[in-house]
Amino acid sequence: MNTRKHSKAKATAALILTTLCAIIALQNTETVEARILFMDLSMPRAFLLFGTTAIGFVSGVLTTLFLKSRESHGSGARNESSREASDDVCCEWD
Image 1 (spheres, rainbow, N blue to C red):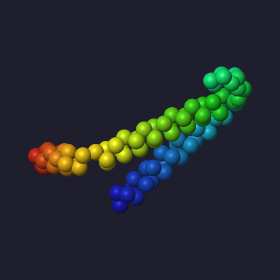
Image 2: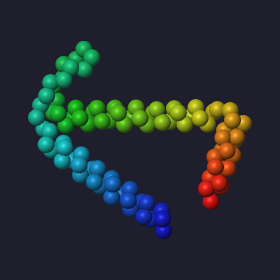
Image 3: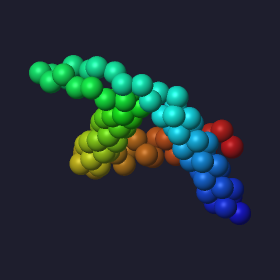
Image 4: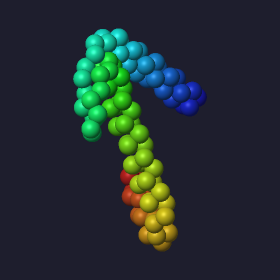
């Protein structure tokens, strides 16, 4: 039952986020000039906002994947001992 509530919350959040993105895109249709590296570009402001958001999202996902892969390739003994220590702390609270 908890997973059903969780998936419903995810769907609601996605719907709200999609609606907000659509509103922002519709309000930013005017053309702006942007200089990216050595290029001068003319594009709607919504495309510029979407592009910078997409770059930020992709860099965040790649950073998370990189850090998780480093964590999983770390020392097995060190990871096991830290898990045991965190289990002990968890059990003391009960």
